[in-house]
Image (cartoon, rainbow, N blue to C red; front, top):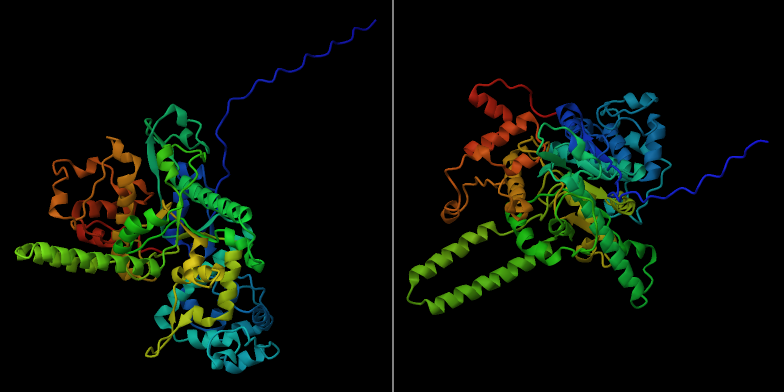
Length: 571
């Protein structure tokens, strides 16, 4: 008689300890033309704190400005960027025997062209050739914008006639086309954001805490040589918080519209009324504009987040709740502020004049102070740069649709200008998105679809030569340092005795200098730039600025100190 096995007792379900939710890694897409800049980006994302939260970066090719000197290359790059009407782009591909997916930058611009026509020089591709190419392509003059003369031409012909004389503006046009190509890749392959290769990520370091050992991504398990410190991916945390804040806003807006009175039919734009279509993870501006945003725009316009939202981070709850977004500032915001400020100054001057009629010295002092304040008032473009952002599919399609109908959205010329000028991408992008999704077509109501992260995740690299505005490299650094100092002063470090903000700006008033401890060695304290990932040359540049209060490029410092320059200019 065989003995039957007794059934096993039911398993005892022991609840597993709760762990923090594991987030997926973020997918960056970086615009670069290779060289040292691309290598620096690879090294930055290979840092243990970054590698735990980001996939390795994928690179979208940049476009050398020299490639836009002849007609064929210009139109091929414009077609790959998506701004040519589809019918004209298909006609170009047939004529040149190209597949349209060739290398947009480093490969010479020809792509995979098999037709002998692809080897034609710029002088051979005349207007008659364009007429031959587009002989069977109709002109959509009904939906085009511009003069009547422009509307009678094919878009490609108008683009070439206006772009062939831009001269020094080719680098601006090349930058814009490279961004449009990257946006197309982002929406088709679902990347999380676009970067330029001139950015540096924020890397905060926190004291070791037993509660932080389970931080999502496992960044704290890396051995970095500092037993008392662990890497905290503040960069990823700021991106996630900006994304969550936008999602909270969309949910809240959708709930208000669905729970309120029945609204009129808005057609295809109804769903877009509740969405963010452009989000900035890095931004900059002049110091006067940054001061306006900090003191006026942020307190007034920042979205107030739900305090019950939970996130996985080593950052304190109070600091985490302040990470949100604000709508893109426009010129009307600055104009409104200046009007109110002038009215207040006029009222104060009048009151001081009446009350201090016998104190001419005080009145003259106040008048001189108000006069000097006018020099630092905000103005111009409120926010610069398109070096760290995300765009939705609807936002990208609206942008391309707008550019395909209007060459003037990309190239413009005043009455007394000799040649056309190119609008930079950081101006085109927010304006076109705001115009597309505004109910009235005005930027005032369209800007709620453009979100700017209150806490930037990426900052401009110090004294990295700009491909467009190299004469402003030092000013870019001054604005970036102001922006870094602004956030660090309000950050949780101010309650930590081991962190001291070093402000070595000579522009402060004498009263402010008295608050500094001049007996303390600056080298023994954390500097605002120390919390960014920097390569070795940039560390030298920052150290020179810290000790001499002067922004110089690395090769200028190396030449001045007699040390050999280990590498050339940026690629």
